[in-house]
Length: 401
Ligand SMILES: *Cc1c(COP(=O)(O)O)cnc(C)c1O
Ligand SMILES: [Zn+2]
Image (tube, rainbow, N blue to C red; front, side, top):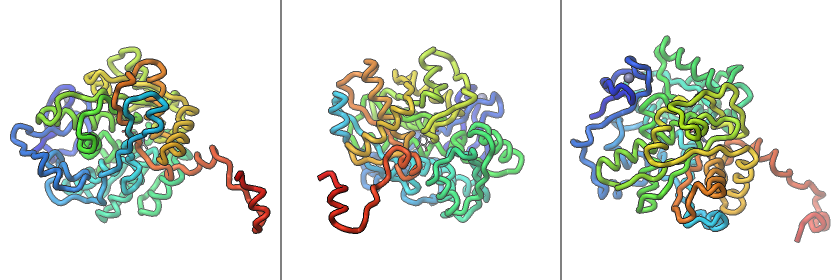
């Protein structure tokens, strides 16, 4: 069994209570399991397909989940890029290979399953795009209504298309993501919708399985796991899962948890660099990586703990560095990701240049979303195909053979 617990004052609450923050002190909540009574057997896990639900003993869902076969994503060895950077080993966990094309599906399969178990018939979120796409597919699968709030003009085309075709009620807010989240939070409190942003502690439970899969795929604990950071839920989730594995004796040490933000949206990086107890919100976040265009990360408290307690670090990368790495991943490794995802690998490159990462490390970057999410940014970077007359001589004079 599990319950909810405040990460700050440690107050505990029944798992059926619908809470998004501690009613006593206002800090974030986490799901806690009675690990001493849990029976987990890695041999049994290995017999199940690699997926979120391989680890169901460490997930809060009791009945059969709402699933579209999320997780089980490829872990690619980046031989060329790793060698170029002079790194011992560099891997990318391609979360763009999930059903809706981002890691959000891991959280939503759990979140929407919990919505049903809690008797909720309408789910809602604010989103920079991927959360809305993911919520839309699981609400469709479950046959329930989804409401998604998007920052107007700042959501990549593919993500809007997904929210629409899967039948979510999509509303554009003339404001940024942080404002949209505040509004939807209030709407859920006042009108009983079920909120599935990453302040919902159940969502992070699904996302922690990224770390479990990395360990299973590598067969050892990497020195460092690097993630792009927006609302800071994912880095917190992966660390929480690793803590559970450590408590269960399944690993002996932590990878250094490392968060990468965009230069125009870097409150977590600032807090780490300046050793602040909490983040100072950025009121006007700006970056081409719209998935991490977030100035007030709701999971910052958990993320700072993840980074500090594992000896990790945080770094910011410019939009130019992000787009250059997006192209490098595409052309040197055959891996297509959206800009926010390339931030993690761009961050590794930068940390190496600054001497903040050792060259003998074995590093896993989480690349979070698929290239096709944001075709417009790609088209702006690359020249369009050359258009020619339909004859061979025109073709031969056009080609660089
Ligand atoms: C949501 C998202 C992120 C940021 O994750 P957080 O949990 O908000 O830190 C990064 N990349 C992509 C593609 C995303 O969809
Ligand atoms: Zn509390």
